[in-house]
Image 1 (cartoon, one colour):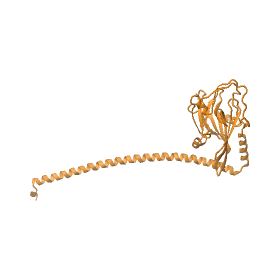
Image 2 (cartoon, helix red, strand yellow):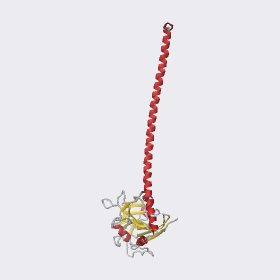
Image 3 (cartoon, rainbow, N blue to C red):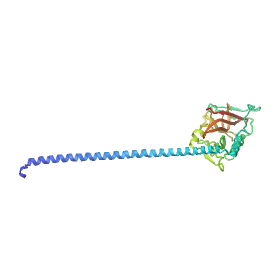
Image 4 (cartoon, rainbow, N blue to C red):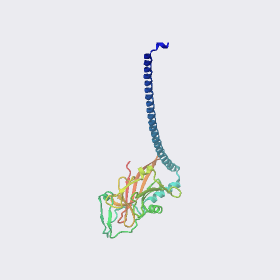
Length: 312
């Protein structure tokens, strides 16, 4: 039957086959392009998901660290609560004795305003920044008391561990003490990067070890922020988390005394020495009743005192 196919018919068939083949080739190219685009999108999607997974894992790790810290603090509070419920007479007596020791001896509460020195030719200069921080910078002092600032029993005890102690914070719950110490550089001047180091002396533990503040304590209870005092070299403005209503200025005086000067009982430029926090616990939750602030006048070394009731 081949005689039925003319040359013209054969050519037409070849044209059709060629056209169909071209269409198939075009479709194959399109399919390959789509497959390539799909693989590219899948790769990008996979990388994006892996990046999100990594971020979530890092976030989970941070949350786990924070939870571990919270759990540690909960256990510590539960331990305090358990100690309170045990009713150990010996422990209560020791705590009462420690609280009594925390009351001022060398820095007792003054019943009256300290007498002004009769012979003194002290002249002072102030800068706006220093005055705002309640600090007076001494420029000349013809007659002055002993070169070393007085210490009570608490500071004397702490100074055996930390010779550069500026002041401390104690609580009625136990004898553990927060130490605020000057950090000195090689030239025996305040370290400009970190002029003050804050840490615990854990007197309740065997050997009274030192411990750093945890994250929560640094941010909400005992931490500090600092910055150079404008216009006054080698002095630093310090803000305490526990005393946000007043500024302090950290300095080393001409006699080498480390001083944290602030306002105490309305008097500017007093040297902060000790803070005592009276606390009570209800259902394991501690609350502050009042805060006692002890200091000395840098010129006369007279004691200054302030009691700050906690606003509920």
